[in-house]
Length: 116
Length: 111
Image (cartoon, rainbow over all chains, first blue to last red; front, side, top):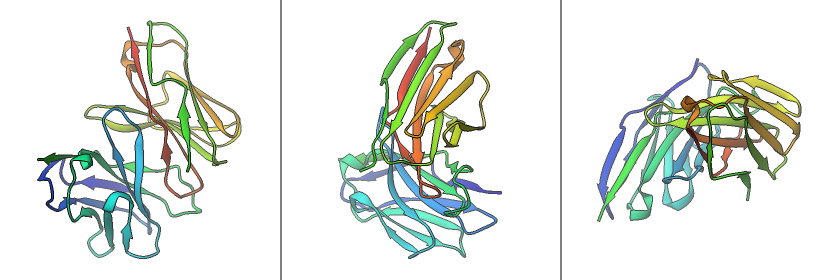
């Protein structure tokens, strides 16, 4: 069975300060993990993905995430927040590549606020 | 770049109407999905399809049906729209096991 927990429903940071969005997962096998971003009234955009290669994954717009198996975590970070980063972020877990992408589990989402 | 398009951004329908939501992807992906997104409930999977003419129920299929006659097109059908189907509908496609690419969404209001 798989599950994903985003530990914060809301995160507020000042522009130019680091961003940390936390995600823990549970999986009976080595999963694929993803982060998506959703701006208001838009669809979800894939930020980055982990598929059992390097544990530190770099994505678009300066975001990165580190897969830590021992902690079952996949936290999303960015060194310096921009106003345009204000959005909702979803952590997602799905079975490994080649085993079927049907049982994708979405986290509840973390809304990021960026203060000027 | 992968492109997933949805037929409408905003749609207003009356209770009891039959509603078609269309989704088209241009990357030859095997898998396609329909979700609805509601405040406080997150994304919930309605149906998915892993091949032409193949479909599987997701978590909330009641009141919906789907059609996939061509690989690039996946349609969601509300046979008789009800007010509790007012929602944001998101279509996605993916190659096997490699994350999903989403369309811009259709905000459906049923009055």
